Length: 268
Image (cartoon, rainbow, N blue to C red):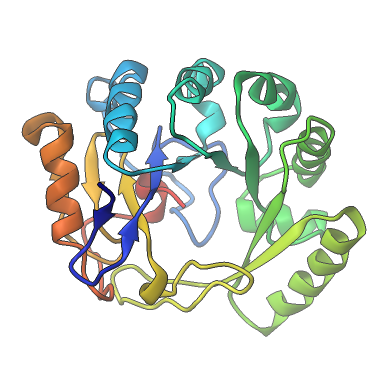
């Protein structure tokens, strides 16, 4: 029986944050000095993630995306992908990454069963990229993208955050880049969790509450019915099935605000 929320939306998409750590410090995501990290003992193990996902799939989930933080900084991430790819019923297994480490992982991820990737890419200007990410190397990200393309992790979607008019020029350059290599561009206008500011993602379904089909699992085992919603349900305290059912039942028609989390520890 499918998971249906109170507004008759079928919930079939699970985003899993496997870490709150990241190798970049993007200006719109976290402070330059970093943030307090979740203690290692509180992070879900691969076995817990696998068992939870298996239960979720049995209940109607068929699309899974791995996020972070930056998922490629999680030790053994290829092993987790291999574990998840063996679960019958997952039709789409994806990952969101900044691609800085992707060049070395792309082939192994594809062989492990990853279907596709989304890459955070806000500019093709190396200096602006370094500024936005506070030290990131654009050439590494681009090499990662092309390695993923070669490994057939397709379609490759480029997530471009637009904060102001100047960023629109960068988005236009990325659009031309995407067309040249048959990638897909998704413009994401800057959001604010605590103020409840969000818009529909261009060329994507994100931000369209009428079509929302997702749940989120944080790295420390909290299910979130909605990104812009404070209520969470602990899979460790409630059990997997009960937490999923509660989250679906409490999913709001439209998100309002969230002052208990941030993008770096919820996932994209």
